[in-house]
Image (tube, rainbow, N blue to C red; front, side, top):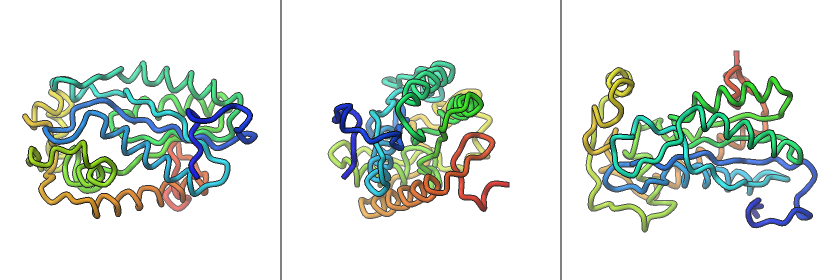
Length: 237
């Protein structure tokens, strides 16, 4: 059973539990996926990971992140990197008074700089903290096949599949310059980076299972690289 911090009372918490904190965003995900897609995925990974680990607790998700690259699309609500960094610093410092290891489970690539910077400082302060990604960008970049399949598995009622359409399908290295200078809107008018056409629930289930498996493995290994990210021991030089 997954222990949710929001649904617990303080005497129920074990001594120095592992705390998983989902970190997401509130940003556009094309014409067919909801704004909280990243948060939903990060929360699902954290909950399913906690269910398979002893003495693990899932904290309420951080639902706002650093999403400036999507700001040209209505509805995107970003707190920016500096505020996200400060939020993570204060949150972990507070949790560290009662928690054991704290792992930030990140669902949005735009959060990486803030998370890495905050976690490195927290480690220097002596806190047992790390972050790990939900690797949804292995197939395509944003609101494409992978995320659409995941949402069809996790919350199908929120997917407007009849509105799904391909966006810019070029690899990241081909569009990175435009993304940096002009955001997602500069390369994809519909906000999609990829093609959701072949998305299906079974693929979403497989991808989620794989992300949970990877998360469990790195949490158990406990190896943190120079960016504060949990890694497999063989991947750390």
